[in-house]
Image 1 (cartoon, rainbow, N blue to C red):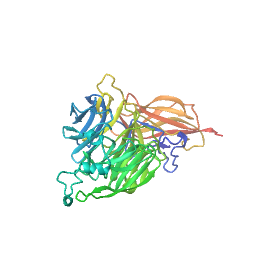
Image 2: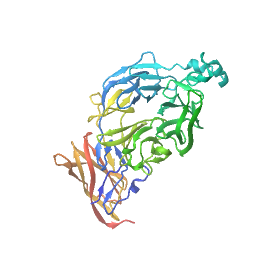
Image 3: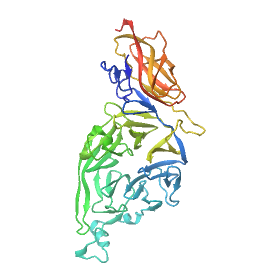
Image 4: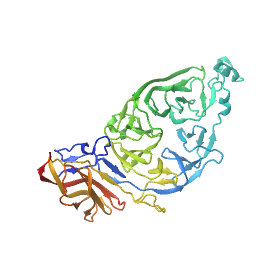
Amino acid sequence: MPTFRFAGMNTTAKPAAIDCFNPKSRQYGQCVDIVNCDLDEEHIATRRRGSLRVAEGDVTATWSDGIKAYCVTGGRLCSFDGTVLTVLSTTVSVLAECEFAAVNDVVVFSDTVVCGVIEGAVVTRIDNADDWAGVEDLAAWVASHYPADFQADASNFGVDAFKLSARPGSCLCTFNGALYYAIDNYVYCTKTFDVEHEDIRANVVAGYADPVTMIAPVADGLYIGTTTATYFLSGGGFVLDDKTGVVTGGFTQRQVAGWGPIRGTAVPVDTKYLPVLQAIDLAVLWATPMGICAGVNGGAVVNLSAGKITLSSAARGNALFFDNDGVYQYRVCLTGETWVLNTITLTHCRHLYAGITNLFGLGDACYAGSSRGLYRLTGDKDFAGEVDEADIDAYILTPASTCGQKTLINVNHAYVNSECADTMALDLFVNQTLAAEDYRLDFYIENGMHRGGAKLPRGIRGNTWQFRIKNVAGCDFTISGLEPVVNAATKRTH
């Protein structure tokens, strides 16, 4: 009997052309669709976890370094400890789409209109209006901002004369002690270890023909994304000698990809969780319409989804790297669905969570923000305990296959290897048309993985057969494969 395995999704090929049958192992690999499942390193599929609300409020932006977390609720900056949302300031308001970045023990926030810093529970807005309202040409600026005690042999230009308050921007990131951010088509940076100020001799990093959508650091440079392309800035950034006032260093730029990142999806990942890259240090993962990409030191970019999936052309998204009980995942939330990449096996699947727009990890748990509040992704139900509590409907759709036969075939039985909390069922597609559905898979009640089967209708024949394995009433399951019992008909195909 042939065996269907679950080696991730393929949305780039037709169902009848996915991951051809291997006659030696008698196994198939990729599937047409895998929904609300997680895939481990052995391509075993498990139903995803549910969602349990832990705090109420319209949560529009989230950030965490794994130890502390901040978010935006109703236009206010809040901290979150895993249970309680605490408003940090009643005087500083921000827009719904606010971003965060950590610089040492300080967390910077910016919504492109307002920016500031969070130190523990204290919010300080950076008031830059006066600084930038009447900026003069460089010579006039220096003359009007000489320190009163200026002496030629003890210059403090780097501290005072060229300093302006930092400005609100987007795509925040930290690199070599400075904060980098974008305003429209340009990338700027703050002074080193002084995220509240810029030096006007060395604050303009790069400019592009299109709006910037990503700034992401690796050890030896920055990846810069725009709406149309991705670039690598090689180097350590600007180095300013405060004693002499001389700026050295900077970057060398080159284009490394012909498509742009989706804003908000860049996540650093230790390369030990991305063995395919054979790299060291931290890599960066980000989402593009062409799939999920990885960037490593030196500007090398790899499309980890090539030949497997493409993504929607979303203007922005949200992502995190998550250790899901030893299954290492990059999760990216885009326009109503969350795509999941197993970073070890490079297999893809989809999670469908209603209303979720933000994902972040705190401690060993994964959380999600929505207009209904903050949810911990756990349990056997979505919106557990709420009036619209919902089952987690999960399914796997196999390729449309001839099952290794050259004749018309029928399938009278099908077996799965599974551990199931309740009941699973099969839908049948013959010649890519739904032929029968809801055939229950009967299991012996026992612990661990075991074999269950379904008796299928007789008299159905076709060139290709396709199977949709699904849970009933949202039950939990773990499944490793599907084995149809194939019978060849006497009539040959033409």
